[in-house]
Length: 201
Image (cartoon, rainbow, N blue to C red; front, top):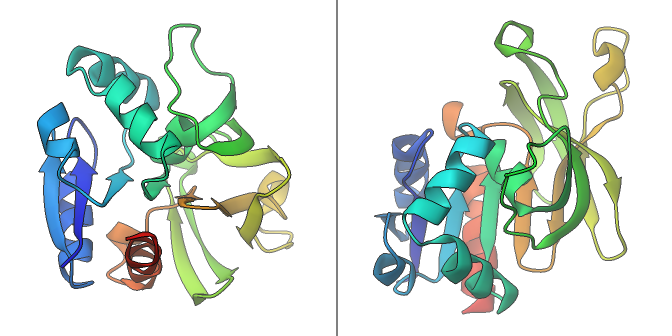
């Protein structure tokens, strides 16, 4: 059985562990390099991207995680996880560490502050219609070659500046969403990632 780790430094770790367990993998929290070495894939949860990046360095996980992703280990980032996987971040802090893996430019807190959090129905390629929860979420400003756009905010008056914005992408073995599928009880995005892990293994 595949083993998928959830970076357990900050954020909604427990919800991802539950969603992965329901997708028939062994789900384990990761806080140390030796735990990272034992997994077939990794989930980077939502939270605060600058805090997580500092904790990655503190727990000596930054370089091992970068290396595993570069070597082809499947990775999925939701919200802050998307920011960490992006090659370039707009409005990031100068001391913020990037893991890389996605040839994208993201804008932190693009949807606004916590009070501007919202929900939307998305057409997610290979998954279907998804109810998405956005909390201080990033969006993708630009994608490079080889990046597949999986979902955009619907083009509607209600969406305002967010209309048409890219909110889910995949590049090879790396997946990212601006939203939090672990909060809705819909396990299809996690199963989509688990299928990526199994295909890589």
